Image (cartoon, rainbow, N blue to C red; front, side, top):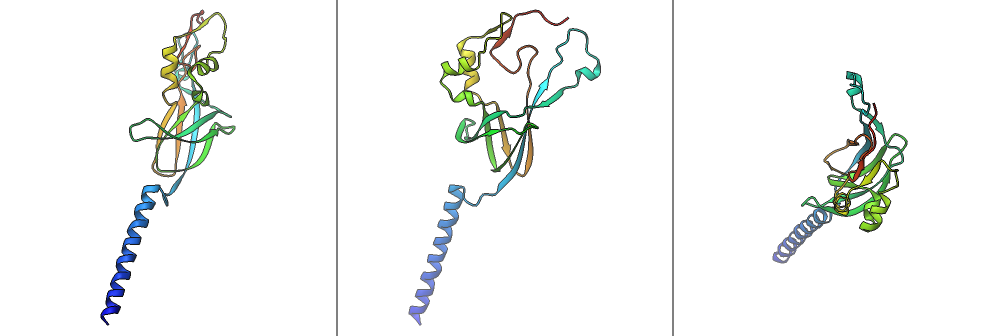
Length: 183
């Protein structure tokens, strides 16, 4: 009888320890974390760049989708830095990405930001003519080292992200326009 009780107690302790180990490993490894259905809508805000005073309708922000636009999805570390690369995503015709992601913080980066600084500068500095010039190497370095977008997922959701470009230079932070402005 005593042997049965000892054996039963041993089985219970073993079962309890196995359960604790499984739960601990699952939470540590991210196993069994629910993935959320996420739709990322990427848009470009079109600024009013006319010279005449705009009417109220012209002052409204006009958003246009960015179709077939590629970005690289990364996890975000606790300190806000770029984590592991997860995948390259490309928007559909409406400028949207549909993903399943576990809860957490994420970042989106231009694919050219994976290049060396010199190659990044070349890739992001097309010849736009005499009315444009580029800022210094430090500007490109700062741009290369920051995410294009950051967001957090806690549930099934739609994440709306937008570029807010400037007249004549778009969303390129290292481009200067030196030409004449529209009348």
